[in-house]
Length: 185
Image 1 (cartoon, rainbow, N blue to C red):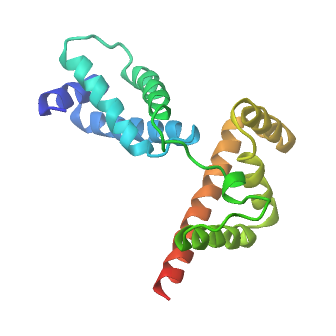
Image 2 (image 1 turned 30 degrees about the vertical axis):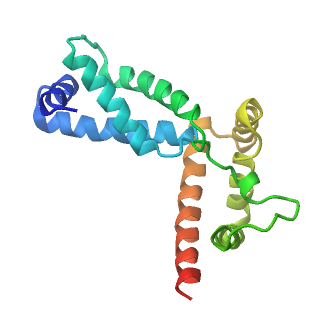
């Protein structure tokens, strides 16, 4: 993205440079969450691609009335395109913790799986149950499962997503700490 294209992009968010910067950061965070909730492998990289495409359109002279909404639409398309490439699919907890005995795998994967199991056990029971339920199933069944989980808990779906994201963040931090400990020994 050229400097001029980026400046034009920012000016479409707000004529005031300070507010444009704030709007840019808020939009970036919103898009990262949007892509993360959908299971994108590298949401930050996909957001960079979204911004590049939108800036290119602006530079070509296209008029965009609502840049944040337009960016969300582009993000959806970029995400769908990313799924077409092998290796861009994320692994759910049910795949990371198979019920049957796993086949022998590299030591690093075994240690991460052991760390994930250990970290899941450290979670409070309600958090452990919520996160395993949240990542259960695939595609439409996953969506239906999340809707019924939110209904059972008596909370909106967005609140469920937020809770699951907080638990997932804790798990990721715990797994990273555990993996570092194992690799340093």
